[in-house]
Length: 414
Image (cartoon, rainbow, N blue to C red; front, side, top):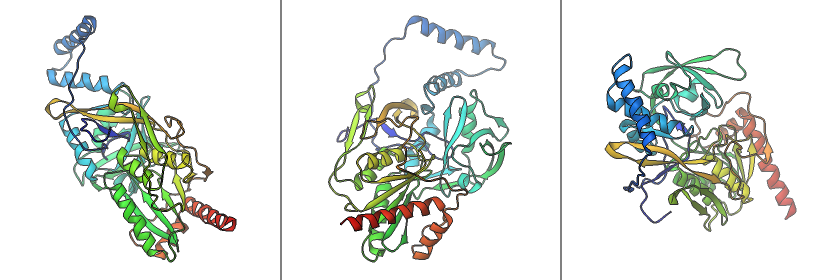
């Protein structure tokens, strides 16, 4: 699939509202549309309903609105991740690869009439307000969420910077819905943060897979190597609450820690929907120990990285079972600046396992933190910042203990 123009933009995250729609390689081309003639009975059904609505609905609705609604319903009913994109929505998905957009920084999944939070992006308004993975959104402003209005309601999460949106969520450990008043803002995704947790032990956090993630990850490793006293002995790759993103970025990050082996394969009906990625020679850490930290908010592209490193024996996975999104969405341009985001593939880890609804099971189960006290500003690169992170994040601290213990065991065996 590489080396030729594609009209397909591969996406690996769920429905992003107030955050972004994510896509893969940004190459656009025209795909020839081949249309089979619809059966007459199906065509007549559509025409009959359209005509009834036009003449008998309580309020007049113009034809273009009716047709767009019909298309939206058709695509949305396929699965929780497929979606019709109008001109504004398609423009947003193109802009989103730069990592800049206006909203609240929330990734959601629409399943079985429920609007569920996959992850609140770190540092974005939703995360600062306190929304968490697993929350079920029951109301946005004055709109009660149900299967009939879910898609139109969630568009309210987008808006001008500084404007407010009110959200009510249902959470497992709360008897009554929790309410939040969140101020929209320009969300800038700096997807990679890094820190020395202790001399010669590094920490890299990837919050989202964008076009710049691999470059930023490579630079983070170089900086950590320079800051360490005797070279890095190991790192923790933190993918907690990472909702996914660009396929190519996830593949590049996994490849950066592998010398060989399959990274991910995908299977679909279209020719471009079947592909396989294999690692090239060149492990940036030269075999040094890696612990990948995940939780239930780690989804899609994050699960590809975790699965690739786990199945190839390159890293141990620690934390909690991941979200379980094992499908690939492709953004296909349509006429007049519109597009359709369509599920086109199912992807599989190197062992051939499907992540869909299963997730990645950690090698080392570590209970989630009672509170999410991650360091707010991880740009301060000194030992004090690393110590603060370990002090405030029990899950990270336990993963670090495993990393150090494994290093000691390896050294003793040599």
